Length: 322
Ligand code: SF4
Image 1 (cartoon, protein in one colour):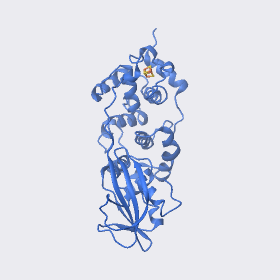
Image 2: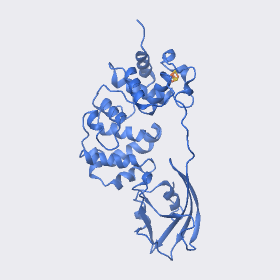
Image 3: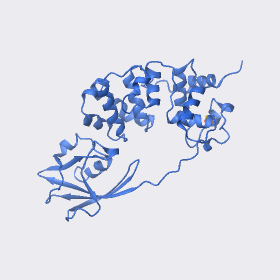
Image 4: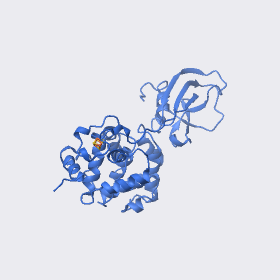
């Protein structure tokens, strides 16, 4: 009898899969959900070494996330980036009162839980027989079926076609591992791939999918002013979409702060959607015109700040590192 691609994949997973990842040795939906969200834009190594365990130490249950202030959740997310994920996690915890629903359909009604995340939680925590479609699986499917076009709806169809209904749990784990260990972005290791000749894109894997047309990132040129009054510094919570909820020092369009404050230095910070170029100044004589809250250095240490604001802190807080 012919060996199917699914059997080849499972045999590979048996030998090469990462069976000991902490979110694979639990069926706690909260822990699985947390790993899915953290891993969306971040590598396994970073999540494992720096973020997953400290977060769980602070919030050991989903109910604790629901009861916490969003600022405390953001603080534990500090440095991981894509802060919308943390705000959505908190909003989801509040929406379901700290108890995640038990089906993919219901999970999808929560803020920030898309179809693939809902399928992953349901497949890994509740053993629902559903395929996932994260970035790794998408890349494999594009290559396996030689699909140039990026069409999410079409991909879901292929995700179900290749799905192993007999071994849904192992299949999904195996696809995730194959995508991060073998069918990797720039240099796929086709010689080590269990799909072998079943893969239609194997001869030219980098053709699939077609490259995205990337626009250059905009550059924001700003002045950052550290207002100091009686040993306290002025900060406000950011409102812009990607950093919303994080605290930061005053930022102005370049040149619009009209006083000669003491120059501290220049920072460059690359974000996913823009690059910030800012000159930083210390201002002890003039107050800001807008509303700010005032914090001592010790209090600032408890706030969640963007990476740029951490860099700024170096001039007033020598121990602070980015
Ligand atoms: S054969 Fe190559 S391109 Fe195809 S799935 Fe395997 S690693 Fe990816």
